[in-house]
Structures are given as C-alpha cells and as structure tokens.
Amino acid sequence: MRGKKLLDTVRGGLGGGIEVVCAELKKDTDKYDFAVAEFRAGGKRVSTGALRSLVGAFSDDLAELSAACQQLIADATSEVTEATVDRYYGGRVETNAFKVADSAIAGRRGEALITLRHALSSGADPVPIVAAFAMKIRTMAKLYGAHGGSAQLASKFGLAPWQVERAQRDLRGWTDEGLARCIEALAEADAGVKGAVRDPVFALERLVGVIARRGEL
Image (cartoon, rainbow, N blue to C red; front, side, top):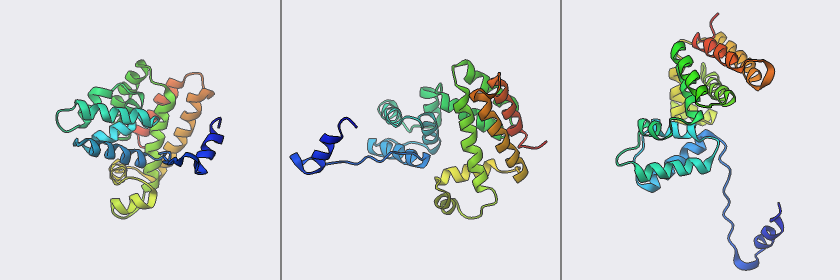
C-alpha cells in the first residue's frame, strides 16, 4: 500500500510502464500446472507422482515450489521421479503429512502411526498434518457416488484428473456413513490440535485410527 501512489501513476501512463499481472495461485491444480510449466520450460521430464509430491511439499509457498523445480531441473540427470523428490525434499512437513494420510486412508494404521511419529519427531506441526487429511477426505467426499470420466469430473469439481483418479482409488471400500464419521473426526482433531485438548498428539493418533477403519465403528 505504501507504493500505491507510484503504481497508480505508472498505471496512468507515465513513463510507458508495462504492468504484468500475476494472479495468486490458490488451488492445488493451479500450482500443479505451474510446476508442469517449470519443468517443460527447463526441458526436463518429470513423472506425475513427482509433481504431486512437489506440490504437496511446497503448497504453502510458490517461491519455494519454483526454487525446488529449478533445483531438480539443474541437478537431475534423468527423469525426475517421486523417489528423486523424496531424496531431496522428503523431510518437508507437508510431504510427511500426506504420507501419513495416504497410509491411514489405505487402512494401514500401524504404518500411518509410525510415519506420524517420525514426522512429529522431525519437527512437524500437528496442524498441517490435519490439513493434509482434510484435503484428501474432502476430495473423496466430493467424488463419492459421482459418475463420469476423470477429465469430466475434474472439470466439474475444480480438480486435476490425477486427483480424481487418486480419490476414486482411495474410495474403494468406503461408505457414505464412514466418510461422514471421518469428517466429524477431522473437525474434532482440528479443534484438538489448535488447543481444545491437552494432548494434540493423542488427537492425531485417534484421527488416524478412525480413518484407517474407514470410519466404521
């Protein structure tokens, strides 16, 4: 705001300035497309899994996402894969959070708890871990019972086709009642990690258990 007067003057035509509008990228699909464009411009092949991991690891900071893409473009001697991303950025909190969520959603409770404890011992904050669960469960809830191709559903729900396909795989074996219970558990865990309970780690472990059971009692 301190530079608003100068900006308004330039926008008014003084000095022949050119304004380049850079819209904020809020959706994961926009950030995914941004990463795709970075690798394409750098002439480096990148796998879909690697792109997912990168966007998950740097979803909160576009500058860091760009820097990570550029580092991988410069360093990788062949195609950038999910293993490459994990080797460079596996310690990122967001990446660990999605690993916990993926294991729990797949029903692997023990694996999810081990990954959770590793993430917490590495300095992960419980809040973004719950956010990772919420992102995945919300996408699953959107697509539950939806019919159509991945491209059609992606357009309808504002998702990328790979997000649709992943959610459809994750939904196998789930019921709408189970999803509803998991959404309730997410709300409780979110409040818990933000101060509603004394032990946020217990709130996270309880959430893992509920989701690993697919919300079944």
